[in-house]
Length: 204
Ligand SMILES: C[S@@+](CC[C@H](N)C(=O)[O-])C[C@H]1O[C@@H](n2cnc3c(N)ncnc32)[C@H](O)[C@@H]1O
Image (cartoon, rainbow, N blue to C red; front, top):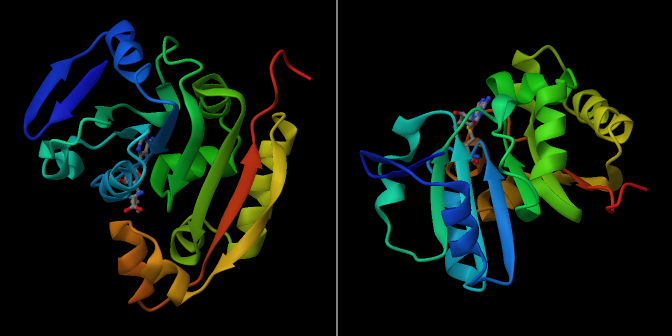
């Protein structure tokens, strides 16, 4: 797998990543991490968590991945083609304000994405998906029906729904991601968070 620090890509074996991870009590994976701001903020606030930020776009990560925090790494990967060896890593998975193929994969129930999410998480891991109206509109959906469609995809794939909550402009401002701040001050600050839990293993 490819880890990034500034402009320097390095290859790291899954076993080496797992060895780093064992020092920490929990692991968060932030999929579609963008510039990694949320991953970094979470790692600072929760030093007993190991945080893995993943994005398909290496340019997004070049600045923040230089940070020297010991408990955060950034990996380059397409969420729709997650490597099979990345399994059972996460206690919690976040997908904040997805767009493009990540959002399309959630809406369309793309099997490689859903299987990848199920594989990434540990038994009963939490999943949080923050969705914004503008990205869903570009994909042809209104906010609530789009979120409901993703909820239905998750349920059909064995995730347990844990509810949906509106995020107003104040909620967006308070959330430490670059995209959240941008949305909070933009034309359409409508967003919500969809929460679910991965199945308990062995599979119920
Ligand atoms: C609107 S940005 C949100 C970034 C960040 N989560 C935030 O809140 O600031 C969406 C991100 O999803 C990433 N993305 C889109 N499709 C992806 C895919 N198939 N695999 C991985 N990342 C993807 C993009 O590269 C982009 O960084």
